[in-house]
Length: 112
View (spheres, helix red, strand yellow):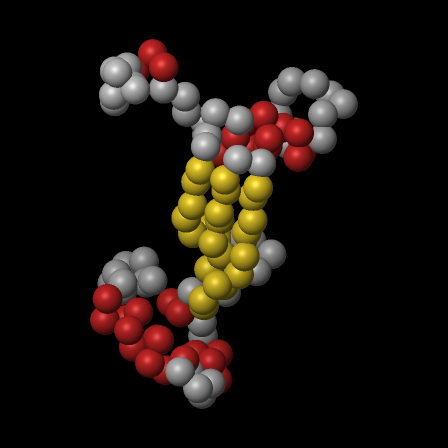
């Protein structure tokens, strides 16, 4: 770590296309193999993502070494229709969470 931050020529980056299991390389490689190869230079990553098969929920991406998990978390409150929102905030604690998100994380264009 004598030269920190790393010089530009040593930095590794990848795009979403690199995570596509069908992109380039070995035809016998599985999508999991391709993902493992793309993430090899990454030690840890964490964040939130949207999954098209579960569009009403925010998901947390957590990756460390060979371990990767994507778990459903809170609602994307801004995408709920009025009747869905009214139903969800009936649950104990949900109305407070919704109000906290509205107060601290809300964007007028993008929501939460």
